[in-house]
Length: 321
Image 1 (tube, one colour):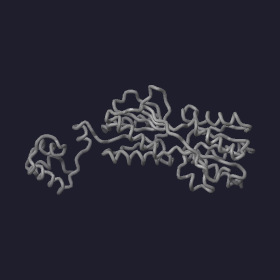
Image 2: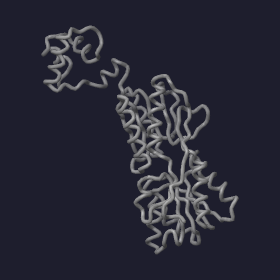
Image 3: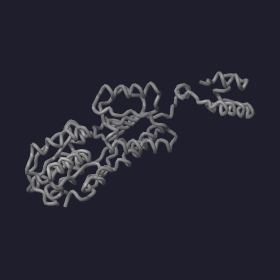
Image 4: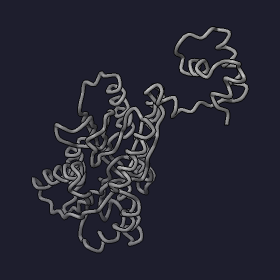
């Protein structure tokens, strides 16, 4: 691998001169600069970005933590974050599939710091309090002493899902919800219960441990085994909804004739299920862009908002009346 010393020798200049050319610092004559740049092009020289970042104290790297890349909701967020950061001259260092593993999460943070990232964007998780760089949390609802964060209006999302089933005539509804130690899961359930408790409907709760694909496959049959006379389901997310719809087909149940179902996230899954899935949209692309912009503002010292709560909306398709 060609080094700065090799370039200096080929150009007959000092290592310091090559460094000034690379970092656009100090005074270098136009002819010397052109000669050094030409040699770097001829040998396809690639600078050591880590070394440069340590020298410049700026890496133009942003660490991004995504808990589950199999979930299209997070995939869309990650893509949107990367697009917005790239438009502003930053590259992404991505850590994926941390799920709820605190050790993986902390190792990701350590790796980011060792690589001199300028900031971190992460899904909601247990926080390290000793970070000296900006941190933005998405999919996060917190207290006033939390860092910069984005969340969707989860309570309103729960209300919309429940109302969609009630408006479609459902009378006996199963609410599939995530762990209640997660603020957004709790808020979503509270919203659904607020609507249902002011209706004539019966309801039942069915908790799932997380929102990933394997859990959805494992848990879907159990819901049907536990409850038999329901006519509506609020699914934990679109992945869980798709798994429930697959079990329904296996058991010769028709949607929405035998029961209606509402998903959550409005990911691409909601458009390719059969029938297409009614779902609550959180606009993941918007979340990703906002997370990137919030971090960029913090890096520029121009942060004006500590928390952004995004609106949600119901996208009605063919699994509800």
